[in-house]
Image (cartoon, rainbow, N blue to C red):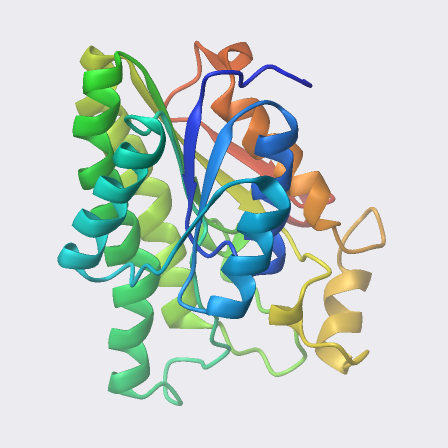
Length: 250
């Protein structure tokens, strides 16, 4: 895939996290110019410097923040042709333990953030004559089974990631006439800080329920993102790539 994204201009949200930073590195390796967006200055600044990219502060649930970020990318490298909606937050609460404030927080970041990203990327891609949007969902946008032993469903997280799955398909239909492709990636359990650093019972249970018997490496998810961004995936839109070590197959 090296060089397959030459000429591409990418914006990656949540680029300070494990998946976002891996995706940024892979897209840059494959030839794209990469703008890395995150609320955490320490995450985005060093990464942008490493990749000769653009560092952006982006609050994904804010329309004004998106307007500013998209304009900054355009001024830096031209219209965006690749968007990776990677920003997200997790929560393990079940139905009766979930607070309304946490519910609205997850909706704002995980769902509204993706919606706004697609909305503001579409005119840029239309002007460029092509575009690829990759939305990070989850296996918990497909199944509600918890990784732990408590039986909690992580209902808010599952609801937002399920919404991302269907929003992707709806946007794919809306944007297909403009040559803009929209696909989703559904990672399984990734060896990333969101899961915690300790070998907790929940982590071990998730590993044991995965047929391949291990967590994914962030680079394995990044490879799929780069594929969807490339012209090798030119006939894929409204699709979902499930990268879970077989977790949803059993």
